[in-house]
Image (cartoon, rainbow, N blue to C red; front, side, top):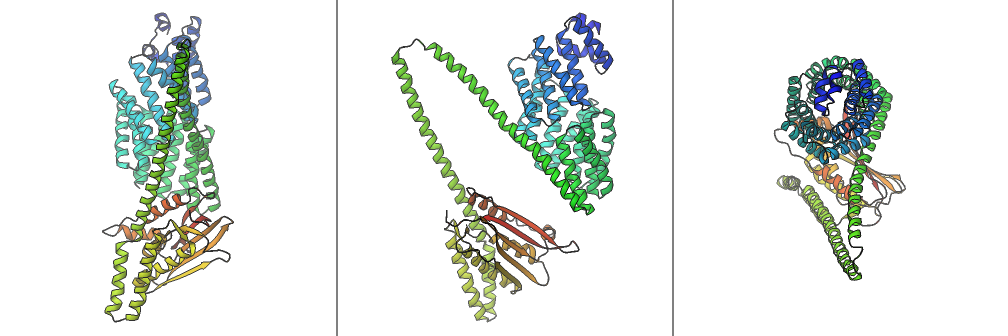
Length: 615
């Protein structure tokens, strides 16, 4: 220890190699700090307080960690060593990220990256600082739901780690890339990255790294419904995390183990571990794990039949998540503003310098500048108008493309051919009256579809009439066994309300072919129009079919699967149609069940603002 002070080492890596044997010895490091203060050995003091902050962080003592790291930054500035300052700034960012303080975390990592890239050294320490900053910024982008931006940062960080042969850095980056692929639903790819990260952690004998990787692998196993494997790999990490003493990962392991128990069906045991994770999260202000704990507890309460408690936990989950995500979104905007302000200040400095250079020019030069500025403004105005016009044309093109997709969806060739075949069967069976009756209805439906396709919207009454006509045609193939009931609440002026044309057809189609087609016995579709408020109304479409889950099972067992795009197109059309409305629209799909809890149908609840004119 005395030798370090006598040598007066200035490089972080050199000091680390000399003090490594005692850096986890609190008493020894306190003694070193006292000796270093006597001789104003600022580099040594910076290193010591960085290690002290790291020790506090690793046991989730975040306020104490911030206090130590603030001292580290103070001493780093005294010794005017950029590498030391960057390391301390990155450490500060990590602590704030652990505390879910995204704004502060991003600010510290941005400062670290800017310093490292502009004034940092070209040594391994300097390059490592850039890699750490990029990796940390990538983690923040993940929390801001920006996986593409995060992936770029991780890839850039990994390039540096490979160049410097830093196995720890590679382990961290492979782990983070795995989280991106897990978020995207590419579970096999995520497992590959997680296992690669674990291999590096085994190589460097990082117990904490193995805890993190095994929890991530366990999460993927849960999503793949490999519950026993998930329990087997997560359970040992609880003890390992407790031995390490980092409460952040203790909470993570308890939560994941509780989640796996829940999915396996061990509800009571699951609740014990999740409650433990919740307590640890609240105590250490770990917002993400707190929100996730409430989410799992809501599922547990629901499976226990305690719906009141389930609702309470669900609300707490929403509140916790909303608080965190709102802060994250605000920080993302704040970061953009910060970047913009920085660039603007640089530009202002440049402008002031130029103004100083031309202060003695003649009036003629000023006139030239004025003319050039006027030309530039004219050009900018022209560019602005062109961009505005192009954007408007693009939006119109997107709307037309959406309407064309809708038409192709509504004018399904299978529906047309099947309808004609059904009518043909009446003719073959010499049932001329029925053939003529349904042929008239079919031709009327086709004319209606073609006519309404030219309009952006139609009256609600026209839409209801068209849907009744459509259902009559479809009902031919069910030997008219589908009973259709329509009710319009008193006071609803269906002839004065405007809706997008053929907007209800996909819901009727789904009720028939996914709900009623496989049902035995009485088949019913009910449609109800009612007032929700002075400026909103509801359309409810209910069937007594087999329900969505059973329909999915039947569909999965079929050799061929046709992907329906009707509902997706309908949602897009509703978003486009009501984008300028004062009130919001909503679409809710409700799975109905009987007193035994068995599926007995599906209900569509569509809330729309009242529109009384064609847009």
